[in-house]
Image (cartoon, rainbow, N blue to C red; front, side):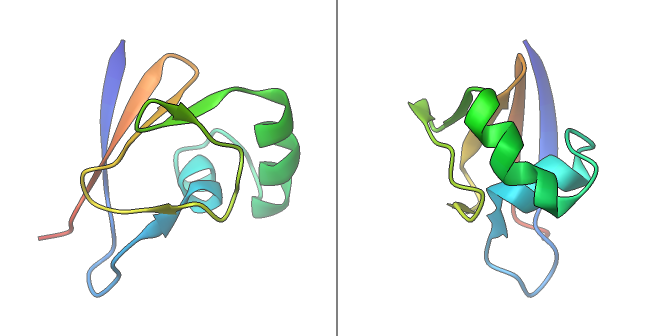
Length: 75
């Protein structure tokens, strides 16, 4: 399984699942997040989650399409 580190921007404490999908190029626009999550399984810390507004904090792990996204602090 491929692993990708994703850093939260400085002065922000979390990133949303929808933003993660967009910045990683999985979807093209934020508006596509709801439809994508309805049709594709996404795991957050090993649990299924389809909420585009799900807050992801440093230490969280998101699995999308056989890729693990490791959420990290910007520091």
